[in-house]
Length: 117
Image (cartoon, rainbow, N blue to C red; front, side):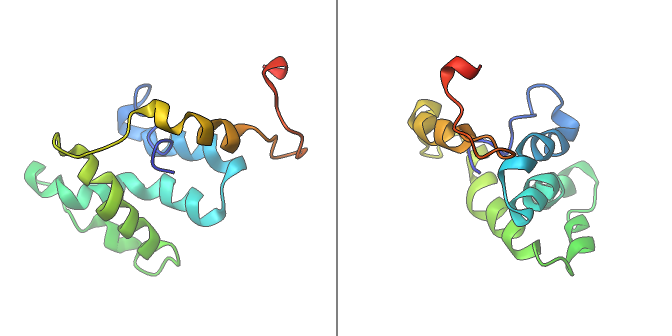
């Protein structure tokens, strides 16, 4: 999820979680879909108070079974990635994983090859 959850950001920065969730929905579990769809609100915990916004907006979802997963994802992976000193792998490191992730048609189960593109 780490290299894919923000894939909508270059196109629509303000609603990128919705775009990312829509693209990933056929490929991920309900929990991961919910996490991607809501991570923007949860990420707000780390900076919205600097903009005069309520950093605790995520608490509206406290009853969700996916709250803890999304909170952990933002705390452990998404928020630290904004640190310029954060040690991360280049995108190419994830190439094989991304091909594996998107390499099967979720509707048919058929492996998608380069000739299908």
